[in-house]
Each structure stands twice: as structure tokens, then as C-alpha cells.
Image 1 (spheres, rainbow, N blue to C red):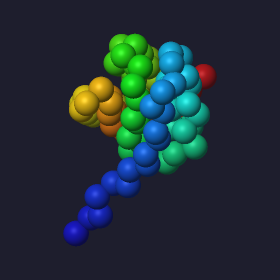
Image 2 (cartoon, rainbow, N blue to C red):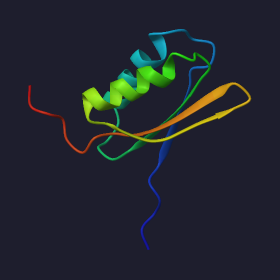
Image 3 (spheres, rainbow, N blue to C red):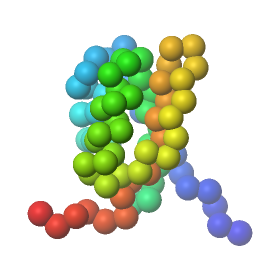
Length: 84
């Protein structure tokens, strides 16, 4: 049996754009390929920001939910770092 992927939680509630994406980017840089990062945020601009961020970086936005004003994003780190 394979263990489920680990998930790191990053609580960014109360921070305004662009801080949630910047802090998530910093966290993802230190994670292993395929690792998952769950981000909690309250800034409505984060929805479009994380969609664009994932499109541009190659990370996968696997899930997005909203509960009582708290946005939850689940991002899987890309398998490899693209060549510069």
C-alpha cells in the first residue's frame, strides 16, 4: 500500500494581495516535487491569483473550496523545475 501524499498547511487568512501568492511561492520552492500545499486565505483576489500562478508555474491547482468566507486552495508542486 502506498501512503497518501503529505500535505503542508499555510494559513494566510487576513493577508491581502499579493502576499498569499508570494508566501505560497516561497513555501512551494522548499517542497519536494509532487508534495501538496493547502493554503487558507480570505482575500477574494486570491482565486484569480492562484489560478494564474498555477498556469504560469506548472504547479497543479487540484482543489478550491470556500467555507464561511475562508478560501482553501490545494496545490501540488510540479514534478520538475522548468529549465531557465
